Image (cartoon, rainbow over all chains, first blue to last red; front, side, top):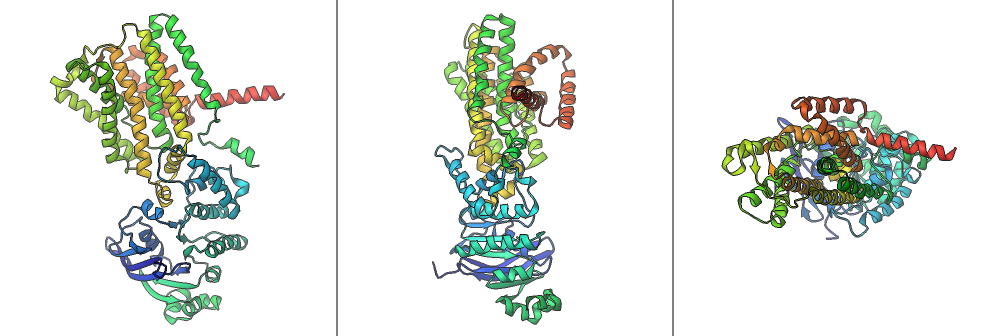
Length: 251
Length: 323
């Protein structure tokens, strides 16, 4: 199993009524890889995340995670297998503190907790809060956090699930230079720990420093795949998405 | 900084062991009811029952945010089941009562399986229909369920209502203690997370349906137990319990007491039943009164009246001591 890819996206097609959001998308991700998923707005990147994480069923094709097909499973079952994700728009649980928000990521499905499971999750939440730099805000209601901290909260919540594969949907969205570096450090730390990552991001300069490979979507189709430099140099990609200016930024 | 912020959070958190202290009021109510004369005993019996309904409602809806607009279906089903079994089939009360609770659980499982994946207002709508459907059933199968008349001749458990009051106070105590523990446990955390975002909770690996389902069963057991027992005290069950006003009344009690606090709805139920007894003469106007109270509260004090009042009192006491 160690040789087989962690994730295989096998000819995923997703249609919404007459609109084809994804068409025959096919790629795979090896264990420990950090992959950037890029493409212009509306290319189908988030839809692909939704299909992989089980929020949307594919119209055709299938997703194989650690050697087993997961398409058609409920989102929580996919998450339980070690495939976690964050959302483009931050979604803290309102009314819950930072610590509680994190702890939710570290729970099992037993409804009645007689073994101190919640206490253990809180303990782990504290440790993760330290890693993502939220330890000063543990008792604060999460929805009152500034945007940058919310982004780190999302990642922290996913970390509590101890995922094998983590899908990050625009972790830098809405962040300034300094905050981007903070979040980058957190992501680099995850990669260093051997967590496989797929990252959707428009802030390409910051993204390309993190990833070993980039996959490019345009109009729902995979149009290029390769090392960041190769992808940036590819004429199809330049034309479809980056434009000369973007390509220059990567060089 | 973190400490001062935590005091301001509106999350329904209560202090660890101290939260159970208000349960000490129950023996006091028992004494009042025992020595205070029959009218007081009977009012307290109703107050205790409605408090249990409000607690059962709150431990699910107050935390998950799924408004169960048909909550009366649980006490009603348990009441009808124990009434039919004891009055028509001569089952001993010791068997018919648990069977009544089991019937409420069965209904909760059925309704839960059908509705818990529905969110927001649509959950409220779909649950609100259930008691109305049951109301129809009591009329269509009138021979069996007594139609408009209901079922009479349900055997009482005790001849002295004061014993009934003690049983119901015990039941309320267990319900409150269990609910307080439950909502502070992992399950309560998950329910509050689900209230925030069902989808996010699922993405974090939480089987949201399972937590909602089990919580709904607990909620049904509390209402079912109280409803079944009250039927034996009243020696009858009437189909009015299935009308929307029953649930509306429960929600109003919980809303005045402070939703998501368990204790608030318990106190709300106990206190407001006294008021309710006064309004008995108003008949249909009661429905209107509840509607007005509910709307005014939701608009101006969504936290209820009792919880902010209790907090204000606590602050006053603390402030007095500090000075």
